[in-house]
Length: 400
Image 1 (spheres, helix red, strand yellow):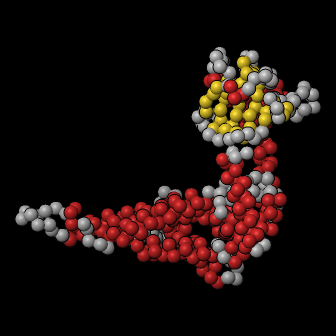
Image 2 (tube, helix red, strand yellow; image 1 turned 180 degrees about the vertical axis):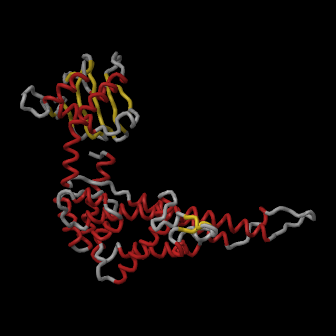
Image 3 (cartoon, helix red, strand yellow; image 1 turned 90 degrees about the horizontal axis):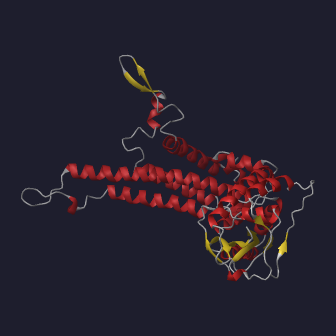
């Protein structure tokens, strides 16, 4: 089996993995690093497991190679890695292939695959307990990456935006005549009730879609700002990434956009806050309005009075249809203005990296690479994007 590499797991008591290795061995009774050199893995049989069985197959590699010291091989044709050993004396190979995690066994194997799966899962619990403090430390110092899902978030926002626009446009058109009831003389009547019902239904649909649009936009915005913060290349002090992720949307915005003294940006930020307070928050938090507009106190001999008094006139609940066509149009115009602001000037380069779908890393070296890429000319930035895109495609397709 040429090209194999080995990571030996000795019994040295000073080995930090020694304690977890002993615990793991209790879960892997019958497992051994022995694998017959003369056996060709291509002659072994196996099938792809359901992804839910091992949602993070890389942990199996860490368990068997790093903790237990099994032989392994790196990249192959449509294979990212392979680990070789045996269970109850029967050869077994674990592989991460393009189409999923696979367990290979020799023909006429007597050890059930589900037994192997069960033992591995039990052992992985020990591995996760070992790695948890390390993972937290890596997050704290920013040695992490975040998957760029902006296209998905933005697509959801635009889906609801288009649906809302079509519904509001439908509301101002007369109902389709084929949906109207025939009168006694067989003629189609278009009465006031038909028009009102049609208008109400269409506006209600627009309202439902528009609230979903607003919520989707703010989700997309927060994700976008985290990505832009990485791609602007500015160094991150230890602990600041977790603070960034936990920050409010407007705090995130200020990390990439200087609004102080910029009249246009300050006005835009005010519009965004109004949309957030008036529309997004009440519908995202069970109807609760921050200024007590959703609460009514009872004034003796008068009736129920909103706790925000005349400010209730600005409440999303002041109108029978909470979000009308004009409200929707105003939201869209505000979002478009902010979108434009986030892809020009100093954010031109970071936006291009974001739009290219690159997954950002937040360690110091990666941030320095982003800073260098956006500081160059358009050709240099394009070369950087092409190189990263090619690397990603090669890794995903396992074209090694």
